[in-house]
Image (cartoon, rainbow, N blue to C red; front, side):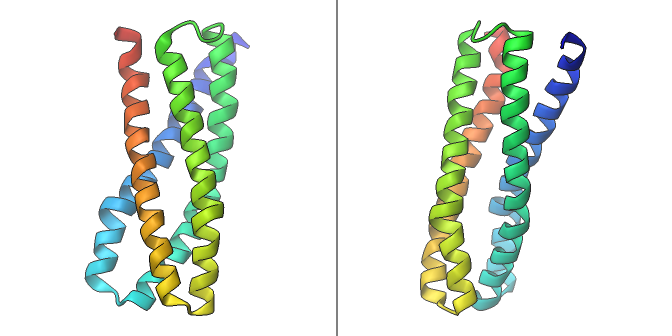
Length: 153
């Protein structure tokens, strides 16, 4: 198992980077560009298609993060040997729960509303998605800081 630790750590970092980076891109680049250039019906369809593709990847990222996180936690650190590891664990689980709420509570109804042409409902749900993504992005930035700075604090 010790020989796998560097690979597990690398996979963990890549999955986290892609998830957090995707949220940053969606919130700070794609959304403003879509608002600037597209009428609401097209904007909603763009987000529906983009989220469908991105969320498929997020499911994979979460699986990789949980598998590599727990494997690395016990193989490399022998469990919750430092307080920053417990903090990362808690934030990571919170991010996963928030994604579940986002996906099942907001995205699936949003996608159905867009497909049904119910633009007011879709727009309201998109607003909830936006703030949920923002919350998870902020947690992602915090967990990254904790993961990098934690061993030195």
